[in-house]
Every structure is written in structure tokens, then in C-alpha cells.
Length: 249
Image (cartoon, rainbow, N blue to C red; front, side, top):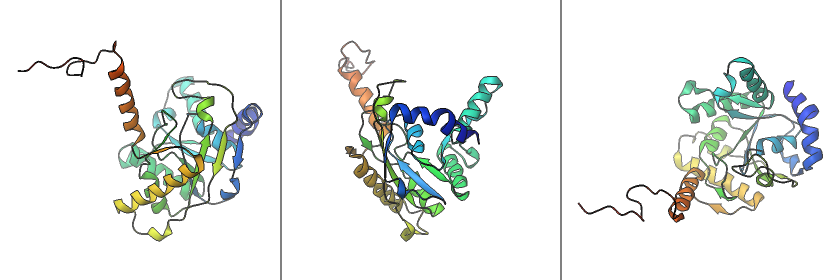
């Protein structure tokens, strides 16, 4: 109930009035039953605007630490994340990736909508990067449809590295559901998982119009930071960098 209060009474109307987000293809999201909403990821504001355009709750996973804080701050943090559609990552199965799958399967088993960002992290330059196969594994193991989603303009409202940007009208596009039942029983085949993931990313690219880069976003960020550092003459490159060659031994 707190989620609906937060969305419709407290936060939702203000966001709709201020930003007037435009939505296309909302009819592709089922009115009931489980589905995976696989979206591009341009800004931390994505998880606010995408669910705002739907009448159903969309659940995402968040770090377990957000739900275990102490005192008033911990209670407020837990209440906010739980109320805004977040569930903690269940690490009983191992690491964060495995824990996210466990938590997501539980949400889908309850007949709810689960939101996921296949890129794994926000794009630092507005391009669409290679998807991780967790989304494919989740779809095949849960046997639910995947709805590709493109959220645009949120990187203007909340640019990477900044809390606030400038006003614009975000756009949310929902594509037709993708059915992967033809791969039943193949959820452990890494080639199938890659094929399914690439199909999902292609549909996201088609909806968003973003330039696609066949590289993981985390790796692209690292390479971008390294390139910036190497091109800065005042930066401390450390031993062995191009402008500080090692002496021959």
C-alpha cells in the first residue's frame, strides 16, 4: 500500500505534471500475470519514469544493504526502497548475480512484473551496450515473456554523474512481448543464452534508436576513463604509462 501512496499520491502526480512523460505501446504490457520488462539504462531516474507510465507495480532488485540499516535512517531507507517497488537481492544462492536471479524468480512466481537492465549498469555516453545473459536465463527458467523497453530523455533530466540536469519530456516505449518458449529446456546452453540476450538487445535498440556497441558497459566505462587519463598531460599516469617509459633493465 505504501508503494501506491508514494506513486499516485505523493510522487507520481508531481512527476507527471512537471515532466509530462510520453508513453507508447503500454498495451503490450499485460494487465495481469508475470512478465520481464527489459530496459535500456541511461540514468538513475529510469526506475522512476518507466513504472510511472503503467497502472501495475514494477519490481526491481536492490542491494540488501538498503534493507538492513539501523536506526531512523535505516528505517526510512528500507521503507522507501520497499515502498517504491524494490526487493533485496537474495544472496543465499551465492553472489549478487545469482541472488538477483533468485529474487527475480520469486517476484515472477507471484505473478508480478519484474524490471531489469540487461546492460548491468548505466550507459556513460548514451550508447546501448552488450546485454548480460542473466535476462535470458531468467526468461527461460521462469518461462515468462520479455517485453523490451526504451526509456529516453532521463539522461537529460538526471545526467550521469549529476543529481539534476534540465527539464525535458521523457519518452517510454514498450515493445511487443518476446516469446522464447522455443528454447524450453535449454537454459544451460550458453549459446542459446547469448542468442536470446542479443535478440532482446536488438529490440531495445530498435525502440530506442541508440547506437549499439558490442561491448559490456562496465568495460566501456573503464576504457573511457583510461583514455581520458592518458590524454590529460597533467594527470599522474603512474609508472609504465606512455609518457613515463620504464628504463631498460
